[in-house]
Length: 247
Length: 310
Image (cartoon, rainbow over all chains, first blue to last red; front, side, top):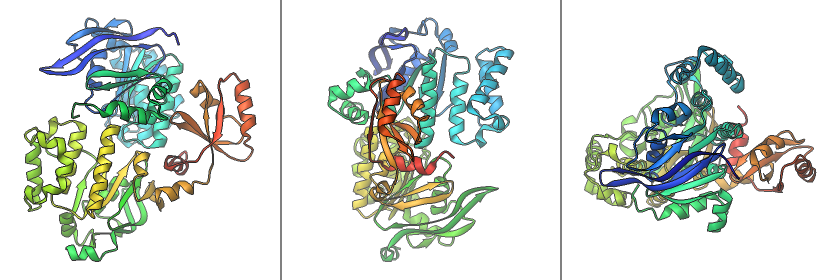
């Protein structure tokens, strides 16, 4: 599939003292692609993702995200991406509406844009009746959908999702992935990490990191064929098994 | 204490257990037994009441009605005995991040009045790599290591019953497998284990599982029996473009439910479903390489069925 390149990384490396967290990685991600970023705990995923988001300066190597250089245009990158993690997403002590207001203001959206986008999100998620409920009081499934909407309300080119479905039940996980599918079919690039390997099957392409290096990168179908396996779960176990880093 | 335990057929007996938070019913009169020496799984969505149940079993909360008997002890009356005889790993990492690996272990040992050396044989297989970093602060450990340390601390007083609340959340597939291998080893040492999880592959590794949702137990049985009793007419579907396929299948006659399932979609067929006709219609709509074939369901399908659409 020929897609316009949205993320491009060459020889990206990050060292912390004598420890090489990310070791010379290179890859491209196309527009509208759902890109699965896998690896064992401690493989370097979060460090790599922080560099792509403009939050951490690489030790060496280059990269562009949404057309901006990750070393020189970090602030521009932050305006053109969305980010959501399992650990940090929404403010529990604010209402649903206040959370959306906060995020959109941080993104620098105009009042008119905020109003129309908020209305759109409420209608799309069917949660108008929860608008003035504190986020801590809404069920986890709703919280997730809302967090995704908040992370993408400024229509970013790329959204980074760091273990968005950790600890979530099978039904809620699936509903979340339908949001991902929908965003991707609308042209948004989705960069996602997960420990649920059934979710790796839903990605257009999957990268597996081991000890800071790229160990595998291809479509799920091609990876399964290469390793002679039926599922991505089996592929992951083969690829990640010989990790030297004691997580 | 030990003799009492040995006379019990069930390690845990829960009867009519109810817990309210204001108007919210967290547990709605649930009853089930955990056989002694078993590896028992508690499967349910967030908000099902799992953590509330753990807090009652560990005597940290009092039920509003019903009883919980843990190792022969009543959770309200005999709370001291229960605290001395169970090991508990709460959902959130709850060791002291500023203490080292060894200090945490010693701290928990001293709380229970034992020496680390007394029971180290039990945790040695778990510690493995962790033993190489005795002076590293717990807060500086990675996810998988923290989890192993937490399990070690929960076992340091050699409990009869181990209560684990979502121990593998956020842990990668390889480490999860290792963790479950450790649970199998502990089970061989006659430790009863009650474990909750949101990973359905882990549910398959339990002797018995209870499905819990909105404060109620939906079913209790072996994973094999539960899967066999699914009672759904299930198909797997695939095409070159999966998302359009998912949307299209949901509009087809006789499709009760359609959801992603690894590399395929699962279709729950009801009255009026015609597999051949469905494939023809989908292919005619422009979807490429459409496949549809009958499959057997597993625990995950059952969970999706029982959880419904809330």
